[in-house]
Image (cartoon, rainbow, N blue to C red; front, side):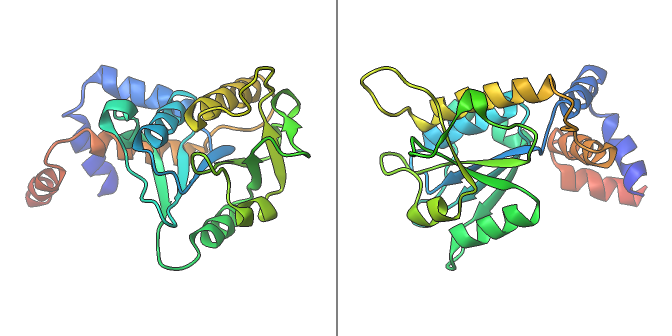
Length: 220
């Protein structure tokens, strides 16, 4: 029934759009992911989502301890629609819960910070699954996250300013690691099943009044 319903929905989507969905899915990866910890400025979080979409990162994790993650449609340009967002915002320890979820999926936790033991971006080992953590504006990554990080990553800087806006830092890092990843022999692509799941999800998100279509399909 699921496959029949997908075929039914595909009739409402142009061939060009369906082709685009399949092409984009081919370039999506879960080898790398992004974690936004307690970001309070919507334009920063939204710009990071946009970069994730552009560079093929499918999953974004948000830790919302004291700040709620908000999306600016003007900045995100609809990118949030095509990503899988995992929000940790309960009354428990959201940082701990997020770390546990990432570890269970085999990610090493990489704190982006000018730490004394930080790895320079160009030297970062892309062969291992990694979750890049970006901290709250001004204060940076929390002490708890720093203590549980498997490694630290920094972007080389030679000016007077010692930090970058998180959205800029995210774009620089993602462009570098995904470019190297795609030129490597690492198996970074989604599985055939994952690609099909994404394609189906994107088809459904393209349909207006989806629930009404489901009802019409069942009545048939």
